[in-house]
Image (cartoon, rainbow, N blue to C red; front, side, top):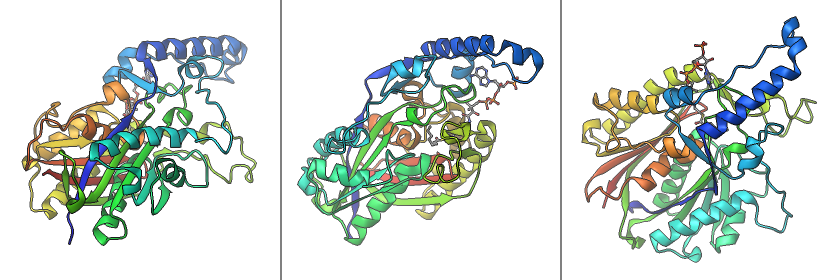
Length: 373
Ligand code: CO8
């Protein structure tokens, strides 16, 4: 059976940064405005006054310090509080495809591939810009790839679940070189007016090239030792936006049509699931967590990653063991663990083993065990 390798990764970083201070200043201005406008109802007890956010809370509770976004002005505008994205004509490259192509070009350059070398494109992210045609097929055309393309969504685990599809396609011979892209424009489905979650997400796109070991020519190659996926239904992270909203006569701007979660429950329930998942997968490969050189974990919360590592190797999650990128990028849904892999692997040497692992909405957990060639 042919060996499968990751031979290149790419990262697209949006043009704007919002710091916690900027975000909190705008959120708190919105709160003051809301409370002033609803003073009579608040006084009468028919409307609940909103509470301000704080930079200290955000940094202590999550570890996030800033986020990259596609549009800063719309998000910080207290009369809007979501990005302003320009609509495009059907014959223009759509926004998600555009950032996917940017990341893909970098991954292809790293892997030494042309568009014509790619024979499958998987676009996998927490939300798609449209129902069809698939974003992946648009990307396929834009980079001049052959074969086929399809979209998939497993929320926070969209990237690792797509990697497994790519790995299996290469392993089975149905494709020889697969491009996986994860365009995450989280800012468009984040609820910027909700104090509990307004600080959580950032925009980004990652890309990964998966191919047969025999065809790989990149200097930096990572052999796939195994991948493992698991899901367990939970309503604790949910977004009800969907194609039936109109038929249900439900308000498209209602709170349930953007991201919402029971953050504390997610934290408590997902940490043991993720740690047990990684441990079981390593055991199936006759390895101990202590033999893993680096864990590239999902980037939702600094404390979660610390606890996962504590459970796995009873040690602190230092930057060397489990690098954190969410301080700079925030939670980028499925792209977080791939950003960590992209930005923190250059120091590993041949034979080193690492684990990419995502966890979150669904619930879903996906892990890929890699060995540097
Ligand atoms: N400022 C000040 N105080 C605040 C704020 C704020 N912004 N928010 C809440 N508080 C207060 C609360 O009111 C509460 O006060 P009190 O104790 O008086 O009741 C106190 O702070 C503590 O609140 P919480 O219990 O909510 O705070 P936590 O310590 O649990 O921290 C977190 C909140 C950071 C959200 C934390 O629970 C967390 O990170 N949980 C895990 C979340 C997680 O992993 N989620 C998965 C995300 S889903 C995903 O990754 C992809 C989904 C698909 C993408 C969607 C894109 C939009």
